[in-house]
Length: 565
Picture 1 (cartoon, rainbow, N blue to C red):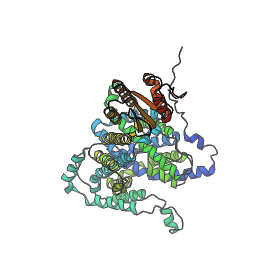
Picture 2 (cartoon, one colour):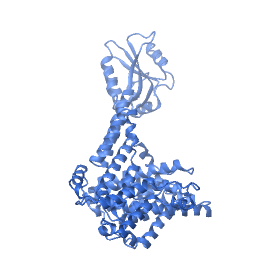
Picture 3 (cartoon, rainbow, N blue to C red):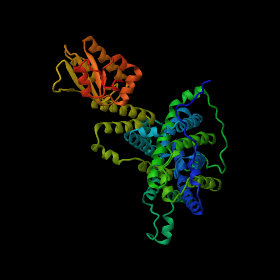
Picture 4 (tube, rainbow, N blue to C red):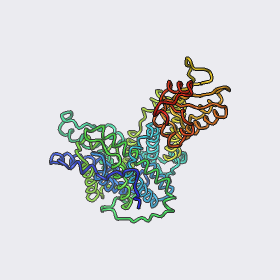
C-alpha cells in the first residue's frame, strides 16, 4: 500500500524562547524585567489609542496587547520582537468593522490566524520578502495618511456623526463640521503632540541632572497622557474622555467569547481575512528584520514567527482582541532598553495586565484629544516621507508602483492597493525580462548562406516568445539548416518550448531542419521531459557551436557522444 507523503517538508514548531533559556541567568532576567516594564508603559497609551481609532472599545486594544503580545513573544521566532495591536491595522479594522460588523471582524481575524499558521508550517515566510519595497512604502505611507486623517475629528474636538470609511466621504464630513471645533480639545491635542515630539528620548546618563535623568526614561507618550488627563480632571475641561464615550475600562480579565465559523461566513469574509493575514505577515517580518539589524543575536526564523502570529490571532479574538502583529516602535524600545530574550515581551504583557487590574478606573479621565495627538505623531513617524523626495532618483517603474499603491491605499483600500501594485510589478517585470531576450544573427566565416546561425540571449518565456516567432518570417527560402546557439539562454518555460516547437514545424514546411547547441541544463531538462529532443531527431542537439557546424556541414558525421539530449 502506497504511503501518502507531503512533498514540501513542514517547518518544525520551535519557539526561539526555548533556545534563549539555555544559559539564562540572573543578569538576563534583570535586563528583561527592565525592558519589559519600559515597553509595557509605552504600549499602554498606544494600545488604547489604536483601539479607539479602529472604532472599538479601548479595553479591546489592551486585551490584544496582553494576550497576543504574550503569545507572540513566547512562541515567536524573534529574540526581541514585541507584538500587539499596530497602527497599520487602524484603517483596515475600521473598514472591516463598518462593512461587516464586530462579530465578523473577530471571525476574520481568527481565520487570518489559521492562514498565518499554515504559511509558517509550509515554509512560506520567505515569500513575503518577494513583495517589492515600492509596494511596501506605498501602502505604509497611505495608511499613515489615513491614520492622521482619522484623528482630525478628535484632534479638533469636532461634533460629527460616525465617520465613514470612504476617503472622499470622510473629507466631506470633516469639512462640513469644521465649525464645531473645540478649542480645549485643540489645545490638549497640540500640547500632547508637542510633548511627544520634544520629550528627550535619550537614556544616556550625565547629560541632564539626576532628576531629569530619571524623567528621560519615562516615555513621552506616557508624560503627555498623564499631563493631559490631569489637566482635564483638575480643570474640568469640556472635552470628550474615555469615560464619557465608553464608560471607562473594566477592572477585570476579559471573558471567553465563543465563535461559530461556517463555510458560508468564511467565503463571505475571504477578502478581509486575506487582507489581515497579508498585512500581519508583512508587518511582523519587516519588524523582525529591523530587530535583527539592531541586535547581534541570531537572525529571526520567519516561519516560526508567522506561526506565532497565527496562534496569537487565533486566540485573541476569543477574548474580544483585535488583529495583532509585530510593532516596530515597541520593538525598538525593547532593544534599546536592554532586552536579552523573548522574556522581555512576556513581561511587557504582564505589566499591562497588572495596570488594567489595578489602574483601570484612572483611565476614565483620559481625553480622546490627547490620544489623537499621540496618534498624529505615530502616523507621521510611520510614513517614509523622504521616499517621495527621492522618487526622481528612480526609474518610471518604481515611481509608478509606489505612487499607484499609495493613492489606491488612500482612496480605496489596502487590498486593492497591494493587488494592483503586485499586478503592476509583475507586468513591469515581464516587460523588463522580455526586453532582455533577443535573437542575434551570427555571420561566421566558412558558413554558407544555406546555413543560418542565431544566438539566443536571456530567458525564453511567455512574455518573449514573439521575438522567436518573428524568426519564422526572417528565414528566407532556400535555407537548409537553422542553428540556434543557446549558451546565453538561461531559462525557458513551456510557452517558450511551444514557440520552439512551432519554429521546428515551420522550418520543416520550408524543407529546413532545426539544430540546437550549447543548451543549458534547465532548457535541456525541459526538452527531455517533454520529448521535444526526440521529435527533433538524431543529430539535432550538439554540445557546442563548433560541433554543430561540423555536424551540419559534414552530414555523415555523428554528434559528439553525450551531446544529444
